[in-house]
Image 1 (tube, rainbow, N blue to C red):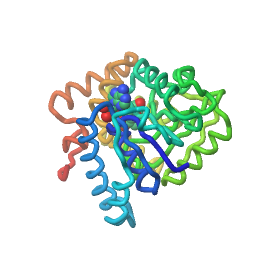
Image 2: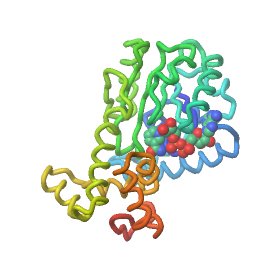
Image 3: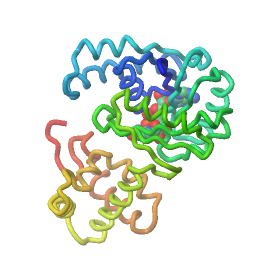
Image 4: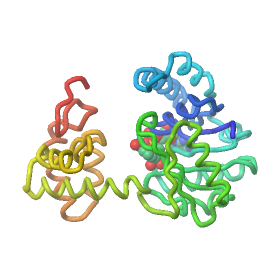
Length: 283
Ligand code: NAD
């Protein structure tokens, strides 16, 4: 594998493209128009600075070499014309993704492997639109790929095991820790663990059993984990937490109300705004 095309240069697509370029691959960043691609260039420049600051051993030269490994295209056929791997990170919308795979399947060369970064869809929801289900699977990154560097690899029953292995190898080569998932699971491994954990913590505060600080302290001391659930909520962002909780059952809805009243309506949205459950003076 040499040439990688990333579809979508938003939050995750830009990180995936930059991480891949940082590890020496030739990357094409594809998005809907040149205006969006100009914004992507800014994101990549910001990522270069972040990598030098946050990634142990990363030099300015490496960060600049990564920028030079990225080219830009708003023409899908041209963007994938020599791609060994396409990583799709377009918005989380089933119909949009299906339509992209339909076109992609027609314009990409036969050799190209397709991987979706979708967080909530199963690859089975999309495989029928790819024209090549044996060369299609999920490769799921976490936000802040350079430090939260898991890459969950999850195929469908149609995915060729050799392709799965190739993508696992690719993930290692771009500095990720590949997480091999044996069969399809909504939420992959990480969110299958994290979401019920955060829900349980939310139900404890919304039910009036304890303060967030007490729950976090219990979890940290009792398990040796570095962060408690409300510290994690602050990183995820309370708006995202609110949106997910308001769509849940009665306990989750109660927590959503608690979040709105005590935090969101007061502009306390987590680390991004300098305050959520905790204060972050340097943010
Ligand atoms: P985003 O909205 O930040 O970025 C989406 C990008 O796709 C934008 O640049 C947009 O211009 C582009 N786009 C829109 N329509 C397109 C099209 N037709 N063709 C090509 N590009 C198009 O979204 P995001 O947060 O980066 O999420 C992208 C995917 O990654 C989703 O499937 C999401 O589930 C997944 N994901 C997100 C996170 C996260 O923390 N944000 C984490 C893991 C996985």
